Image (cartoon, rainbow, N blue to C red; front, top):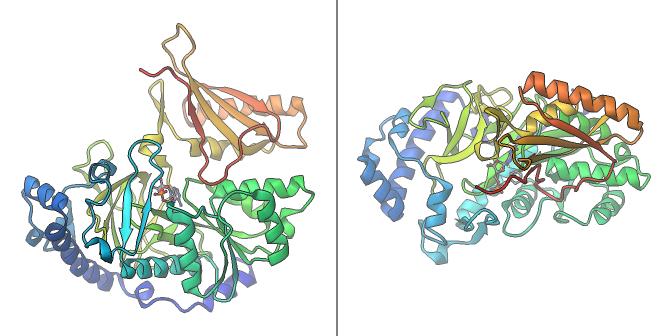
Length: 442
Ligand code: DLL
């Protein structure tokens, strides 16, 4: 830790809930949980139906572990209740609506009361502060504005913290660079791959990305690795921290990472109760430290209380460090629905990112292409990855062989590696698509 970050983290005034003991926190969770399950049961027909079918009643929740008796909620439930069936308050009490893009089906719609918006802003502010951002700083917000929760969620949090917000949204990379040069922001909020796009475009314009005013980056909305953190921190000369969230549970700020430890995001457990379950046998609730699927129950939400929501995100719960009462989440390896099963071996794009970024000749720009060549029954994985600018074609060919071997050793899959020209792969504008599944549809 540099002296500057040490100073930045000690001068922060924390929320009382950030410093309470684990016992106090769990007592708060229990009373909030009891209220939330009763509130959801009374106000949302779907919860009443599901609880009744499962033979559980809100009165059965006597201790925190009783939560395991209650049924899960899934994205499918939200889709079936489209648009407003999950809302627990009359429409005139809903102050804002967000929605997922719905590219893989009907959109999922979420709503917030005025109090929900205030809580959300408070938790984003808490996350940003943990990551080094301070009142009075200028914050360049490159998360997309609109129905996506990233832009407005991060915006309100930065305002609540007392920052000067620059609401640029995603895209228009040239303009982003001009504004970073001219407005001299202290912090940037973006997806990790979009920050990479910005750094890359700066280099193309002859600007050294390490020379800007930016000191902090708060990155999330997609999986990223420690190797990517290292890449961004060294290229841009800043401290990069994680922020996690999902719209069904709130949006960004469900969890945030502390800059002084950089050891994973602390889940703000005064507002959300996390569980880890076995993704293949959801009846099994796993212990801390064990990898599985993350499940959340909201503890304070009014418009859209969410009970045991299956995120599909794969991670594990770790003890709190910088905020001892609040457990951390390990890096998200991926989403269970983004898992590639290649000839029986499970594989996530983040594993490729981790391996590729350890090979100096290769850039972080890659795509995974899945094909099934004609007449063959076996699927084929091709990793398309750009070489770094200064690397020769011969150097790139050797690096391709190393990557192929390393993937075989560490992941167990055979694949083809295709090293391509710098700048030839599509750049991110927000959440980057890594997987291109070109297999014939069954
Ligand atoms: O991505 C909310 C968000 C905006 C979080 C800005 C952080 C920053 P959704 O569009 O609903 O919401 O997507 C949620 O994105 O279930 C994860 O799979 C993934 N995700 C979000 N944050 C992280 C992260 C926003 N820090 C889905 N690391 C989640 C890994 C993340 N994956």
